[in-house]
Image 1: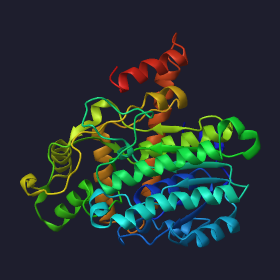
Image 2 (image 1 turned 45 degrees about the horizontal axis):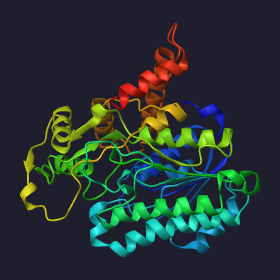
Image 3 (image 1 turned 60 degrees about the vertical axis):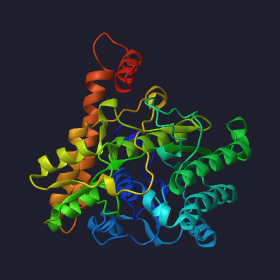
Length: 388
């Protein structure tokens, strides 16, 4: 899982949303794999975002500022650089921003996805497309059971609803134009990936837990917690990204297969409350004061959400590598380093390599255990991580 069989080496890969949190980390990882990364996105939200902190523009094949809603410009970029692979991450990714700007949220998340799919229909050199949505695409019933890829799409708030709509759109295009049964005719491998509540260095978004904590700590303010008992499947940003890369690898190695949605989430032990996450962060950082302001919250946010990742374990042989404690420590270490380092590119590579090394260790100790087959090991690992 570490080098992905070199399938990305020398390939032109379009990453939409490369200036964003997940997009910037994915772009760095792809450059490490030898890919020619073409980035297409709006300007970053902050000069301190990972894109700027890592000086990512210096390491890309092409760095293009553009709105995913602008189909004409998007298609001109795709026509010029002819990417074989597309990772679509450009999105409005915040629940509270969705409440404030619903039209922008729906246009970006639905029309933006539509523009990508239409471009894929138009250009036959695009062969592999991984559309990133969110775990919030599901109709959240506030149940204790984890949501499977076959569960119903939904969304209470505009952001969640827009992601559910995007998934329905992707499904429609897959059925209508990129059907697995007719792969030999269209030659496109299209799938979607669902993950959420990622943490990691370089995220400075407003109204997001870890950035809010880091701003408060650095500015000497109290850390105000709106929903202390909300439970999420917390995972480091490198976890789902390894899943996206693994999925892209599979799509290229076995075209016509895996053309379906996949969940990427952490082990069940990583399902913790907001308060538990912040308390560990403060303890590891060494400073910070937590204040519960939950009585002041007026906007609806789901309090319970978990996704079932059995399919990714069994089908892709993918596994989240970091414990929750390691994920928080990776995150805090990045922010501390950024206070003294003007170029975080090498530090990001170091954390990616540490994640890769964890994968090597897992393969050695689990997949190659004496007297136990790979299939048996995968099954044991899966059952452990999904709480079966």
